[in-house]
Length: 320
Figure 1 (cartoon, one colour):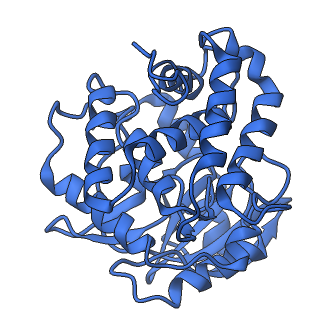
Figure 2 (tube, rainbow, N blue to C red):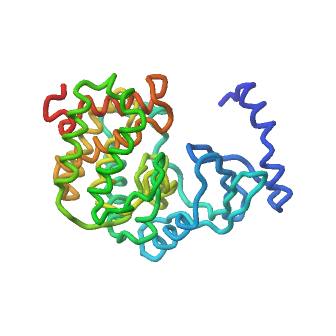
Figure 3 (cartoon, rainbow, N blue to C red):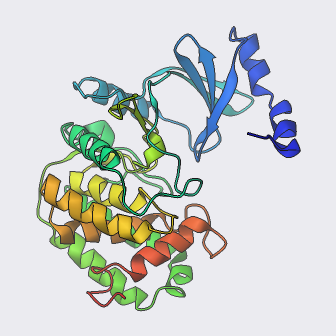
């Protein structure tokens, strides 16, 4: 693959490999970047993450420890050490095995029919996470974009999520309303649907199970799940299933077909009511729409608006 002059200049100007070399890791090299930060492979089964977004808290480390206590069929993150360098948080973590299930759909066009191996992997990961009970540390986490622990003041996940929807819509809801017909009525329907959902199991929720965050071995089996933190909490495992169905393919030409198909598949195979999944998908769009931008110049904002325009719970079955 040809590397552009801009990319070569950016990599050459990167000070972090030199910093890690001075810390005893002369072979450090950049291997990836995401919403939260930049990842460097240090060697000997270790990586370092330079945090550009919200850094992990002590609660995050406790959540990782809670996950590690369960015999999951795949590895999860472990933070070995944390330090500050010129006001930037750096975490040292064990390197997780495997390779990404797929590239993000913004960079790779997904085929019309998703392969069975991919859907089986998603089901395996969802079942595994749903076996981990929600803990106090998980309940005390703050999801991206909010200013308080999700569960604060609430005894039920569904009520906590409804309160988050209300706070999120208050931020920049007018921008979303300008692009989504019947916005206020749709928000009211979504809140009613969330509050009407029955109590159920409370398990760990990853909240961002896009294919790059799932690593597989050569046979396609999931061997690691990474990047907890974006919407990680304790709650109804149906929420993770709903969000996974929606975000697996966000930007490809068959994205809506894939969301609808995965929603039906997860409802059938995991025993979730389809309307529950649809309500959670509306809630996800309403709580993440402005995290990267609040106008049509941002792809995630446009995606959330599109999700709401076609969501049967939000539109009370009137979506086209």
